[in-house]
Image 1 (cartoon, rainbow, N blue to C red):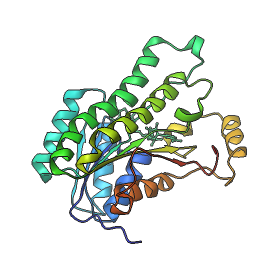
Image 2: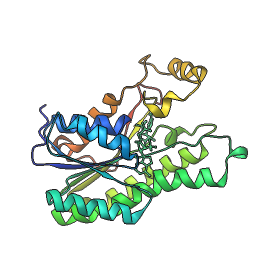
Image 3: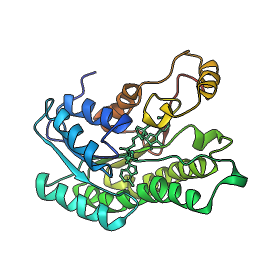
Image 4: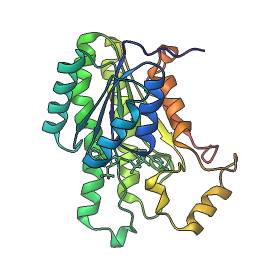
Length: 248
Ligand code: NAP
């Protein structure tokens, strides 16, 4: 199976680090042109400089996915630059963990606003472009927590379960325009997001992973590569779990 993305434009949110950065790198290696949107301006600049070693066709834009206007402006910049957007990866996400009784309303709202509404915002703007093109691949980064839940992550679990609902609903709405919409549900992946977890939590998670290792950002990026490719053209509305067998 050979993946060829020459002439394809991918728009990746939260691509300045972690899983999004890895997806950007893998897509660029396979010939895609990229728009990387991220709220972390400093990191975005250094990531774009680093990824330009792989491909000259990489633009980085400061983007706040929770703000519809910001998504609109960034999509317009992307269209002005490349003329089309073929792949959207809704990857930007945060955690603000706490037990339900201690979770502030602000932390609940913030996680929903960035993870879930951010996915809605970018999908709303970019799906319109894809529908006109009669071509598109939308990949939403959910989480196994959206499937199984987790103590201390009511906000995050709700946002990721919501993303799965958005994925299936949008897949039904726009399938007739040749746009597929799928989700990836990663398990425990080594990034800045999980680096802050206490060692005991990490070793407990490791025990429950049949493949006996943490996931790497590249494990998720390769799943995204498949879902963005023409090899997955008859797959839509699905959730691909990438977790070393943790949930089955
Ligand atoms: P990460 O290393 O923290 O990277 C996320 C990036 O998104 C950061 O650069 C972050 O900027 C940016 N971001 C935050 N808020 C944003 C906003 N409003 N608009 C645009 N960009 C924003 O996280 P990751 O581990 O790579 O996670 C990527 C995705 O995978 C997330 O959706 C996460 O929920 C999901 N996921 C991760 C794991 C895991 O184990 N790591 C497991 C399952 C699912 P700041 O640095 O400024 O916050």
